[in-house]
Length: 245
Length: 323
Image (cartoon, rainbow over all chains, first blue to last red; front, side, top):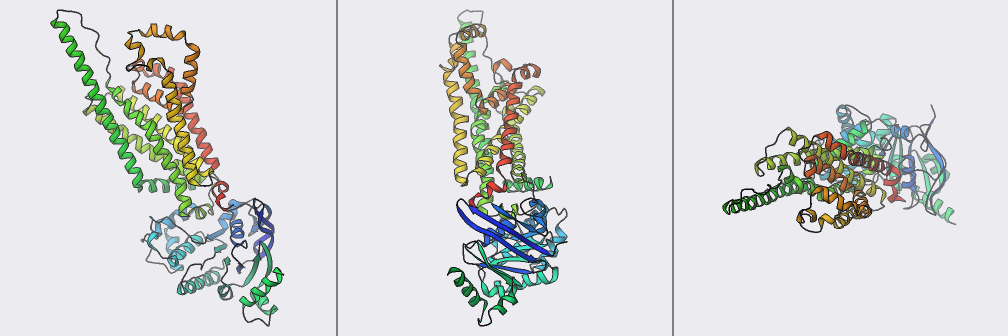
């Protein structure tokens, strides 16, 4: 069994003539919480879309727990959970009905016990008969995480999970991510541009700039490498400025 | 296979809660009843005219009344079949388009496509669900029409009539599935779902309205109401010998007509229901001997667009908005 949950090999994606992701080489070890940072348009969502097999790479490859996203996408999909940015559900259905649908698509034949389990895990018990259409963004995110972990994936991909949440929602979701990682040993790969979240959640980080990975290390090593800087934010801007020049 | 059934089940539940579909079905049912009522009234008028004519002849001393008009109760269903051919096809397009467009608009596509579902499961699952929905729709319409036929039309419904209605129902079901598959395929291919709808409606316009209309307009028998040959009191055998002189022209006209799947559907439904005089009260084997090429084409065309819909509703095409 490979030590790496995620490995990419010169992973690239072009849209027409524009290169959104440029030869990305990245390793994420099992059990890590990895944060991918970058400005808007840096290629973060493209990276997640490639790793979750929603997009096909135009160059290179990636492996999720040792399986190629290009050649074994169907197997990869069984190993991953995915929470898109602005997750949407079937608003006319209840939480239970939505989760049953996604659980069955993941191959769970009798999903109700597992649904009860994950709803408890994401602190959402008691809402299962409510329609998703009535929920706030924070509540949707919880249901989103519930659907992502229903089939007990090895790697959880979160695309801007705290985007649009109020401070209470941000903290609550952050605690949940940490708990999922600690209790279930799930590898978490999250995109974000909120640097404060990364320091409180991630064990390793990568910084993307215009489709290129300009920094990749553990959070501790990154902070140690720039002893004069007060925060990750300062380090981020320093790295960004260095690459830009 | 399970993912296919799960998606189909979801599609059926979604359509069940779709008020638009309910309105469309209610409209089709109402239109079918109205068409039976109108056709029954026309039959009665024709019959009354004949009866009055015969009375006048008898009163004037004639002892040989003219042949009675050939009125078969199943012919009351002509309008109902035509409504499904034209409006039903349009509804099937709208529902097929809505099925793909709603998934895109809601933003649920990413969640569905990140699941371990088969490459063609989304398109085929949706089409399977819609096929079940159209099955329920055509069966419901058949029940409504049969009741209307028996009550308003005063027809006695026997095994022969029921068999004809059942076969025509299967034909119309395939036809609606065909149009939903066309709409799903085109909408999935289009970068914007609305473009898909416009293209699908344009195809409908050509196939359902323009091509059959050209064929009908070119038909010499359609040049006067009630039929040219009937108006000239030309018998069927003489009609065929007249038309033999225009074999080339009639071949082109027929080719234009049969290039439309709507005409295949119509010829099949009209034959099974006995709406066309030549097939009325005929044994099924005789009808089938003439109709099997049309049945084969309808099945093949539906299978072909189903494959097309499956091939086009892949992750790659559905995710193209990102590129």
